[in-house]
Length: 113
Image 1 (cartoon, rainbow, N blue to C red):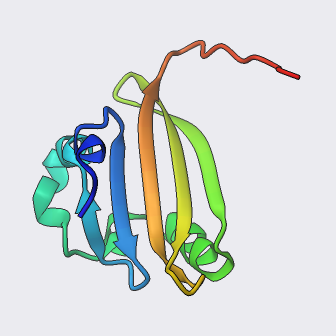
Image 2: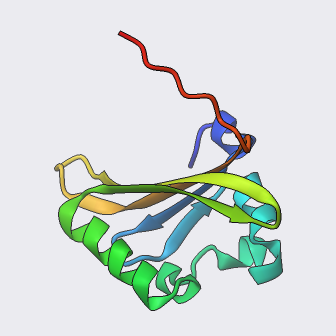
Image 3: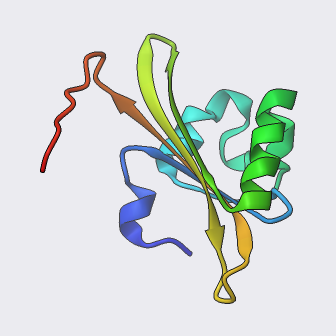
């Protein structure tokens, strides 16, 4: 169960377990993936939604407990994608979280001390 703020968060949040079964999608993720099944993707294999190169990255994240981030343009929108392994109470990798947020075309960048 996710906190209420995650459900209505304006970025897409998708959570999969160690076996890559999609366990949670917030409202934005469901809407984003409506043409691929939306909420019906919950309980499905995350790997089936990705190409072979992406599957390799997903496997690497599970093996290393690491993160992956990049920007992409899709349907005229620029998005920031952040993928990360998450850990259980024993400190073992328990699955993956993906955040996808629309960002401005010319995102400001600041260097702070």
